[in-house]
Length: 574
Ligand code: FAD
Image (cartoon, rainbow, N blue to C red; front, side):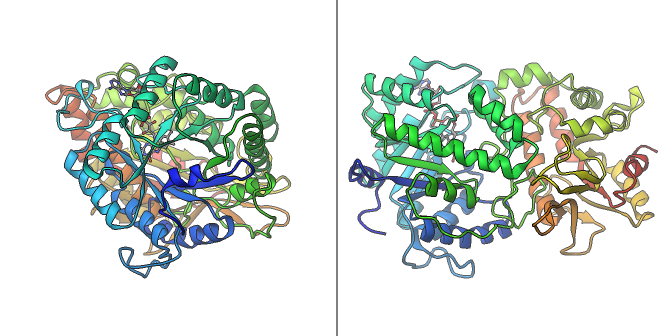
């Protein structure tokens, strides 16, 4: 660490023939994931020498403790999880802490700023976060800051010039409340500059033309702040599609075509991701005066390192294969620093309120909710609060069982609402269009599992049934964080997806164990609360959703006989 640690000074001192880069990490959802991230960050800091490191913030302060801990450890260079993160350290890397301002009080933001200052942090990325819960959410909003500009002013008011403040920019436009408006964005960015912001980090993008045109346009609009483009190397086909959906990204046709050609081979998708990011950086360097780039690392090590090597910013070094380089869904390995898809920043509905109400209506009883879940698994509803993209191809095989489970009893169903599932697979090819992952020439195995919201009574009966069958395991919990049941011994791990490939050890990208279950359970119940907020406090819908939240269990059931594709579904529907 040298100098004041402020990003404005780092950017101002960059010469035309120099490169500079920053890395972004999010706090993993589990304490083991967090502890395993520290040595990874330490390794990346020493191998890649980033100019600074960004640490994300969960909307509404949901990751307050873990974000501050991660930020403090990086700032101070305290990478041993046993050591006190508020203590003294040396040899860290300057941090830029993200901070959001909506749906929290002024006092809590002021307290975070005080703490950040006491930890030696000099840079804040001032963001709005989720839209403020004003009229649409039927809650009091008078004590809140509503926009990133308010936060910039608030920081300046409390701390003068102590913090260097950055803000977000959107090369492809910000879609807010379902609308995008370039003139509005320009005026907003200018307002952020006038409020005291000192640099801009952009939303990720894959269209270099869009970034270059936007960069020229902001300069024409009198925005003089340095711009740091946000680069996210593609890690996996499905996560890119989700991200594109969530952030309204344009994927250029040539990229889409190349991606479709390799989508079944994750190793090739990663290679493509590295070459696409390399080309973005090189083109922007050639056609603009931008010299600093921001990498959304997704807490992974390899792709960012390869991009920096390929653009010539650092020399080639041997890299070992990281154990969690094939990222995965919500049931990845909870010990992995990359555990938990970056779904925006915390539990949210991922839809503007008006769209959410249009799609999911105003349920007032279990039939309404069962119909919504059944429509989703049948593909007539594009998303539900827990799943923001249509069901995957592999679910087609399970369709009759899933319809039966989700439909209300009045339609012959069970009224057990599913938020995740996978069929059993016995040695599919790793290039199979539906089940394949990893390099070509391998074989994929899966155990069937399902995640259900069910009533207390049904949970009891299901657990009694499971007790008769040694090849079935389960985890269950309610919204109460202390409630937890399972027939898996403490520390037991269920591998539910694994692959064997030429030249690799067995890869097991999906395991289900207590920690990953608990992390997802907390998020899944928080989503009911988000949904409830869309409706007036005295409405029947709000009261009904709260009742469901308070009474249902989330249960994950795994059937270990992967050779029998029907075993789990027979057990659940018999
Ligand atoms: P703002 O600049 O406040 O703009 C939001 C909308 O409000 C715009 O439509 C704007 O035109 C409008 N607006 C602004 N001022 C006014 C006004 N006075 N009156 C009326 N309308 C106004 N989210 C997280 O939760 N955690 C993170 O760590 C995080 N990191 C991010 C990092 C980057 C680089 C980026 C690009 C985004 C990040 N986000 C994060 C997401 C961000 O919170 C969302 O994109 C959010 O929807 C908008 O944030 P903003 O700061 O750009 O909002």
